[in-house]
Every structure is written in structure tokens, then in C-alpha cells.
Length: 129
Image 1 (tube, rainbow, N blue to C red):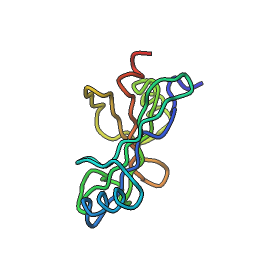
Image 2 (spheres, rainbow, N blue to C red):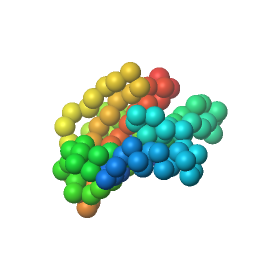
Image 3 (cartoon, rainbow, N blue to C red):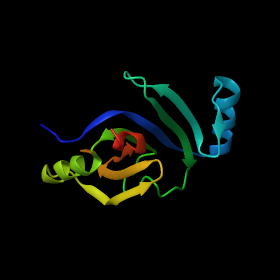
Image 4 (cartoon, rainbow, N blue to C red):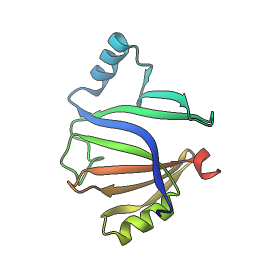
């Protein structure tokens, strides 16, 4: 049994010809509460803990999704990021870079079977559970 696992979708990131225009359009037509980063959707998990999912358009020329050639990247919320990455490495999954820590959690990156870059996020509050 895996020591870490995906527990939800943390974000959807995509390339846009005009990120500000995309944010403005989604705000006007679909009511997104946008800021410089995009829009954060707040919700509660089944235990009643506050959680979020991020929606963000990136500039068309961003390098953030490399080495993937796709115009999108998914971010998955995970439990036990360190253990999960160790298991994935043993299974032959490509790990990109090193774990990075911020005030809102830990991040790691992998490539899936089609070389799509995937961001794995262990939220700070999740690390405390």
C-alpha cells in the first residue's frame, strides 16, 4: 500500500494568449473572484476542514509547465508528499527537481505516462494532520 496518495484536485493551470483578459472574462461572465493569480475556490472536505482549489491562466510563453509540451498542468492535493515521491521514484516515475516548501505547503513535480508535468501539493494544514 502506498504511503502517500492524491486526496483531491489542488488546481488547474493553463496557458492563455491573454491571462488578464481570461481572468476578466471569467469574472464578468461566470462570476470568478479573480486576483493576480487567478481564482481560488474555497470549500470544506468531508471532515469539515477548509480547503481550496486554484484556477490560474498563465502567459502563453511560460516555462512553468516544462518539460511538458502541453498548454495545461494539473495540481493534485496529496498526503505524505515525501513518501509518495519516494514510492513513485521506486516505480520508475520521472521526478522533476526537488521538493519546495512554502508557507502554504510542500510541492513536488512528476511526469505522467504521456510526459505531462503534474504538480503535487501537500497543503500546510494537511502536513499537520
